Length: 391
Image (cartoon, rainbow, N blue to C red; front, side):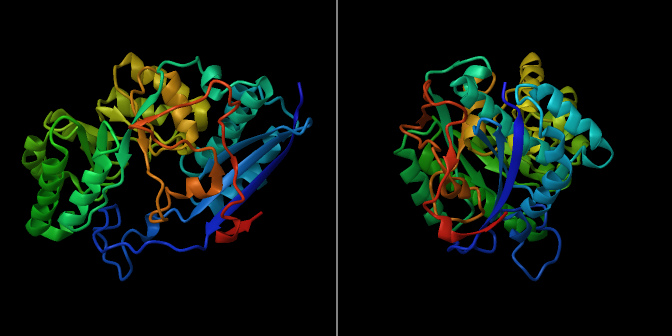
């Protein structure tokens, strides 16, 4: 079997047009801190990282990550790439443990695990291409004819615009819709009323035969969320996402025990052990790890098995092809998040500008081909002039 001969890492920095964000676009962890700039500034993903792992025979697997790409590139180039060059790509479990354990003193959370994720996703894409099989076949095969997806946009705006967007999305056949809360503790009772007005307005358009989810993006705190949950109960939310900081595990436990609205989270958790703790402590009713942060596909499959054993459904954070393959291969992953093709706002949309092959939703579902090897994506040149690429 051909060995790995090269690891190429690029940072794609978007320099094209971006949409303006209104002041209360989405609550987030920075909302409670005084700032002269937009509170979403630190959560914009206007950079993305791609990681190409190439074998001696010239076959290339592509991975990616979006967590602090410039720092991530240095970590991969300096520490992680040398650990996999010269190795057999099919020794993915060994390579994962090698990278994880050799950098454990400083890399077990955050940048370290994101670096492993990017390489690991590339290894799975590479294995699919070398065997001429889609990744979901390597993970166990098709468990669904197609993947149901939920419409993940509906950022906070004025009520009329949110209702118009919801009405337009409803015609596309999605089974679920996710909105964002734009107000948090620093906005007081008036902000609470604004949040509630928008939930009510969106439900008015969508009705109650489809799921509605709501995301706080860590912009609330425990006290505020405990006050909000009884007010939200009548709107039958499928879940309330990341109401408090990712480190406040006990806060998640307390909120989930209330049993008013299912609590979801995990996109800012790292590694199998981190997600295992969320499951065992019953911190979340829906687990939402991010594959390119949690340790890649190798780690994600282990997490899926633990979650299934405890009957905690998994809905990986964000769209993206690596998540779709995991969802296709696991019965416990019942639906995928889907960001519609759109102008660049936060940056999740960049996937459509960097890659060719990302599927579009048809009737609220995604279809993966049995004949497309690997993940099914390639680097696009269509928008190359809209990026400053750092190699």
